[in-house]
Length: 175
Length: 174
Image (cartoon, rainbow over the protein chains, first blue to last red):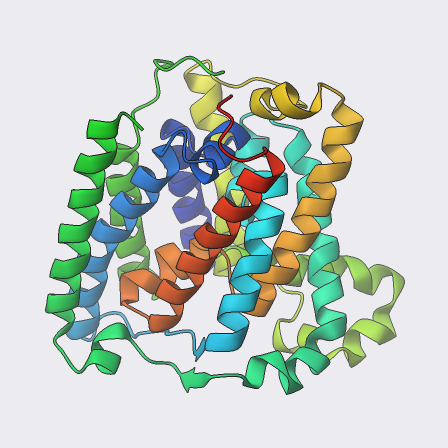
């Protein structure tokens, strides 16, 4: 199948599920950040825990080659926190902003335009970042099992146990 | 506030089905989820309309050239999928100011638009510095057990929780 059509179908399915999970809207995103409504956390970790099992099986069978983004600890932490500031203001992430627009949340359009400007700004400062922040704590394309020197399945079992524990706790708390 | 029971499917079933879509795309396209790289490609494309030489000379736009790839199509698909889902179950609603935002900052669409723009700008600078967004690092990298994915997603939530609580003045509920 054509790779572009594959991408489009994948996106349609993903967008459909995001909307059915009611996770694309501002109230759900900021609701989670304010620790009032954990809908997006439940959705996000359900997807991750499910995906993890299949993806690691496919990688072990050699069907899906790994594409591990490098751990650049400095940039990962600083960039992640800056993202958090922006996320708390806009209440959408890059993927869900398109989904929010799809369900009629037109304020997402302003956010998307801001994101495009942000990408252009980052392109301007990239050479500077590449010489500074991006050199702090470069560990390369490593996985958690590689760093810990243990089987991926132990890591997966820990993730799934932790995730299920989190789900039960959130449901008990009514979040 | 949105009604609790609005014919959504709850978070778990769509989450698990999304996990299956992640597996299917790793299998069929050898691709992993991500969204923020598309914004770099789109931004480079738009900027090249006005400043073609500058874009060609910009290192970052040479790393992520303005082109349509699997991920760009996926992000376009997210819009279509959410549109189909919301129209078919009646949850589609034209809304310029989210309820929670309005309860804290008022119902001005202009004010909301300005802050959505600023927030989007900050968020994307952070995402590109970190190397990706929640789709990429969470649904694309943690599923591969990448160390970077875990660090970045923890920081996304840590930063988001910190700043959302500052913006909404601590623990004051609704």
